[in-house]
Length: 365
Ligand code: SAH
Image (cartoon, rainbow, N blue to C red):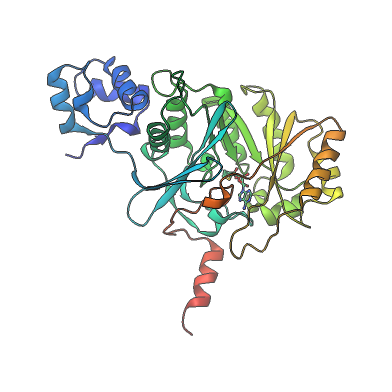
């Protein structure tokens, strides 16, 4: 019989597991604390469980986080972990220290199927969804590595699902992982400090609002449909009007009273004064904050980063209308840990059209 991986369960899943093996459901709370608060990977250490249960658990269950391949430390304190998720596949997770808080950037898929033009993960194709254990396993590893500050506070105070993949296309596993992040018996993070970032999967944004409302970031990147279709192809399916309406619906239940719009600054493409004007008009009725992300280059991307002066002027135009705009500082780029640079290793099994064309070109005539 194959053993179940306890890192795949949130509290209710674990309670279900214990009742299935004839144990009291309250064991779930105890075990969840050992797994996620103490980072234990050995049943023998769970000292408040009966000896007989400790002996029996390894026969039916295991604690199997993704395998840690290596860890890198950037000059600015950013850390990156490369985790193996099955043969040929690796994902990356990044810790970004900031004054008084620390943010972990978590991946949800091996690769990504959305093919946003400026994203290096998108270039690598898509293999599969990560399991719950593989998503929460990133926080599990990072917590073990980072530990607590001298006051006993956890160093990881915020989680953003902005690593590799589109979280809302791996919906169920992402929801269970979110439930663990928020659970007081596991990581106990506040809803306001856990952010899902999406390229705009409209029906899934509605479900997220119902199932697990957390802070929401939307990767906007363009102020009109024609340009957005080029940069973020999923816009063909969910155009801007539908996306803006979904943002408004989300705000009815959101733990924060604004949506964050991410906007990657691409020289000469989406960074001109007319784009700022269009952006202001598009988002006029949506309570939001803009987060401008200077493009992080990667080989053969075909894009250039907007100049600091262009980014500054763009931000000023938004702020002149009373909008809040922050510009993301580039962190960890010396270890390829900046936004859009996470590559891991993806064994592409997708049937993306562009991928097939690429393969056809390589075939001998
Ligand atoms: N699929 C989700 C989350 C992953 S991407 C989403 O689209 O939101 C996290 C953020 O990094 C997104 O806003 C994405 O558009 C941005 N990004 C991707 N490639 C980038 C690059 N090369 N430079 C800067 N930001 C990039």
